[in-house]
Image (cartoon, rainbow, N blue to C red; front, side, top):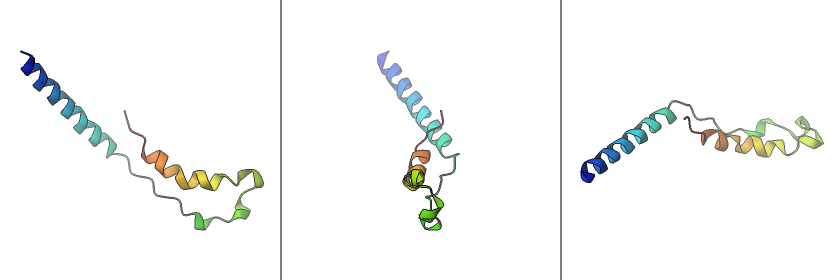
Amino acid sequence: MSRIACHTAVAIILSLLLCTETLQSQWPELPDVDLSKFKPADFTDEELDIPYYLKHFHTFANSVVAT
């Protein structure tokens, strides 16, 4: 009996993994920001850390998983 339960559990896990992959592929990936389009004069002194976050935002956004 436990062998049947094990096979059923494996089948359920594999089905969930396939569904998760399908959901993740529905969102388009965000491209990296081209910082060459910005000048330091575009930012105030208090905003000079923003280009760092703009550069790395796509890494954060592309790692979000739909549930």
